[in-house]
Length: 139
Image (cartoon, rainbow, N blue to C red; front, side, top):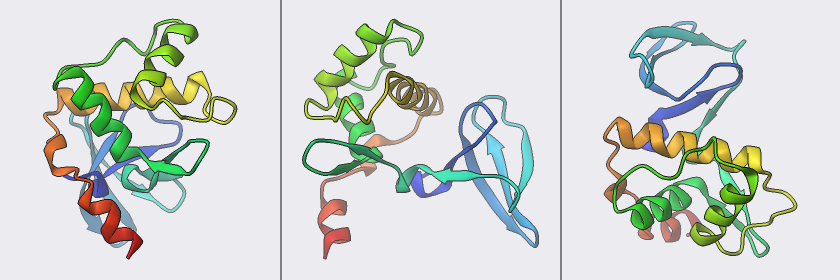
C-alpha cells in the first residue's frame, strides 16, 4: 500500500484504500471496518499523497509529516487526537517546528494524527517514504 492509493472521503470517517477502478468511479475499502463500496464523481476525495501542510517557508508534503511522526514515535501510535488543542499544537510543533500556526488549525492537526494512527493500525510501511521522492518531484 502506498499513499497514492489512500484517500480521504469528505463526510465519511477514516481513510480508504483504492482497490479497483470501475466504469463509474473507484472501489475503495475502509481502513476502519474493511467494508468495500464504490466512490463516484459525486464524492469529494483527497489523495493523501497530494496533501501538504503549510509552513512559514513552503508547503511540506503530508507524507514527510507522517514519516516524521513515525520516526518520533518509533513506529507506535501518536498521542490521542482527542487531547486538548494546546497539547496537540505543542506535539505538532515537535514534529514540524516551522508549521504555520495561522493556517494550520488544531482541527487539521487532529485529522493528521487520526490518519497517522489509522495507518499504523493498518501496518502501513512508512520506510517507503524517503527524501529522494522530494527531489524527484522537483526535477
